[in-house]
Length: 230
Ligand SMILES: O=C(O)[C@H](CS(=O)(=O)O)OP(=O)(O)O
Ligand SMILES: [Mg+2]
Image 1 (cartoon, helix red, strand yellow):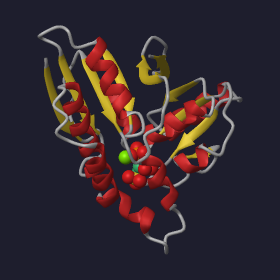
Image 2 (cartoon, rainbow, N blue to C red; image 1 turned 30 degrees about the vertical axis):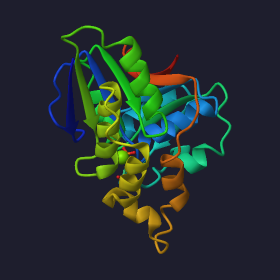
Image 3 (cartoon, rainbow, N blue to C red; image 1 turned 90 degrees about the vertical axis):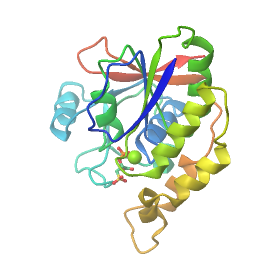
Image 4 (tube, helix red, strand yellow; image 1 turned 90 degrees about the horizontal axis):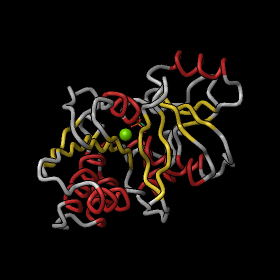
């Protein structure tokens, strides 16, 4: 097995047996909380226009996401784990459009298996892959830390790599510190900036107990994140 870490959501991706797309702040943390709040599936939209067209055809769907971290006009939900956690999403279908996480997942579709995660489900995802999917010597695992320069995703990627390799050199506590200190987190700690709330960072660094991993299904016309129970 070979495990490679790449940084950025636009880097040309290699076709891997398994790609793990990381977005700690905040897209896949949001996805994890959304599933825990009852969401059924999360479509991945490349653009705001595509998301709006999907909703036109399916008025019960909820649009979620951000541009430059900010709420999108006409969308139902922000890219905020704190706010998602306060919303009942039972049985709902979400359509998510974000800068790095969603873009990275959409760039990875040539891989056989694509998982997405933030830190909240990192251990579960790594353990699932180590225990079930890395038997073959030739398995190529690509971990995509989607923020082009953020240490939040890179720290999580290194943690997952270590955990799959069973070396455990990177502790979860170290990752939490690196997420909090990453430049991506700065605006959330800035109390003069009303657009961002510090609670989001606290929600991004929790380990949540759940019985599923998040996988991208590419069988339909639009790729979507679904739960795989483990
Ligand atoms: O909303 C987010 O957290 C980011 C955008 S930014 O880095 O905060 O400006 O998008 P994501 O795709 O969730 O990383
Ligand atoms: Mg991010």
